[in-house]
Length: 77
Image 1 (cartoon, helix red, strand yellow):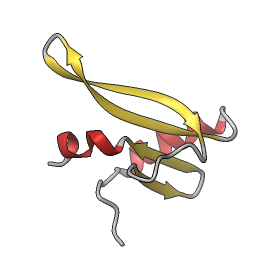
Image 2: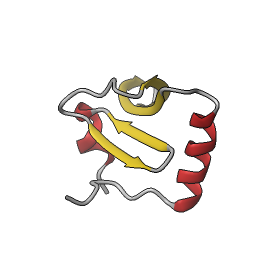
Image 3: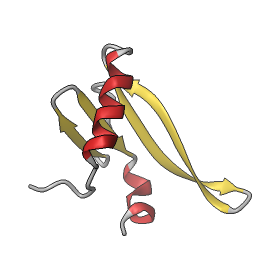
């Protein structure tokens, strides 16, 4: 099944470098609807195996991005 999101090679390289400094971690992203302009992105490190069943997980050699399942509809497009 294809990934729901496309990540550029440059972004993958940056995330892979970041995660190489944090063994056992993945990069997580979600959208918080409590920002003063409406919505804001929140990024953080989480356990590599810390994704919920509804999250979108994108893996590549040396990297993992986890998109919060409740935030997916705000990020598409």
